[in-house]
Image (cartoon, rainbow, N blue to C red; front, side, top):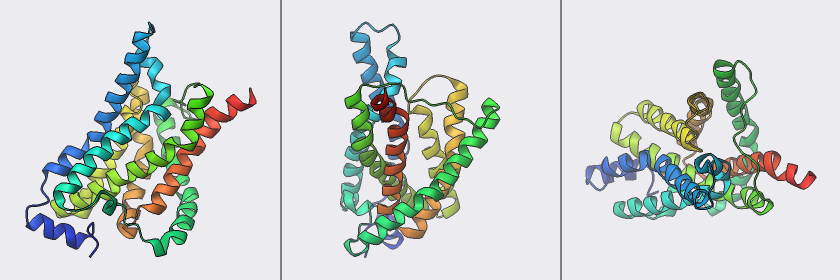
Length: 256
């Protein structure tokens, strides 16, 4: 039996191995880690006498994002251990499906982009009166931009999918005894995390980050419940995030 299947989770719920405590703790952990990681980078800028250290830290998300992932993975490891399963059990990896999962991940990119762009354009029109989105990545040194393309998105994509789809969604589905309620909770909190990545204190931009993500997070939660495997979702997620840094940061540096 798959340790992360609905049947296995029901058994752990009935045995009180799975309770509300773990998912409740994990629900806002990623947002909390984001604020903490940005604060750490801001502290470095403050030590260097920056006049606006918090703002200066904002563009460094593709670098300090790995600190967010480290915090989330550490907490996920602890919570899965309490359930008597491995961290990798959240992924649903099947070696025999690897090639198909890679191809599926590539095929998901244009579909996901449709939901992302749809949410972005709708939120842009609503909040800014234009479909063009505000770009929050600022200029970074070349090594940081390379890291943001080659390393950050792959850790980020897998960790985010493990957090919301691999861990939270199936557990809320079992604990709430309602698939629709689980999707609503997880999709909303998943969208809400973007308000803190980076945390700008610009209320309109924060609202944009929240609203622009909703369509895609709802789509991803529905898709995961259909597949129960994270590899294709993580591949699509990583490649799209990497492309955004490549186009927005690295290519302008290389062409300068």
